[in-house]
Image 1: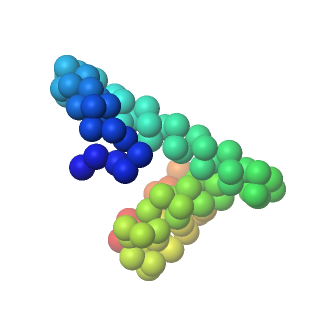
Image 2: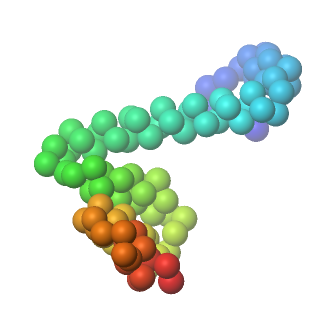
Length: 102
């Protein structure tokens, strides 16, 4: 599918250039794009919530990226695990506690 703001000639050029890349190069490009999107989202979250801890920011990133793909109950448990893991300092119990393993 050609985006509405892209001419057919440019779409063909991009397709030709992408087809010259190896699968590994294409995967690396996707990973780089995801890293860039994550950095932009993290910057926005830090600006909106300057008092947030690193764990709170990780939980907010999870919600921002996956809220439409993960059911609310699972998302809430994942958030709790992220926050619990940051507060857990003992090695005697699994990170995040036993609830995170279920």
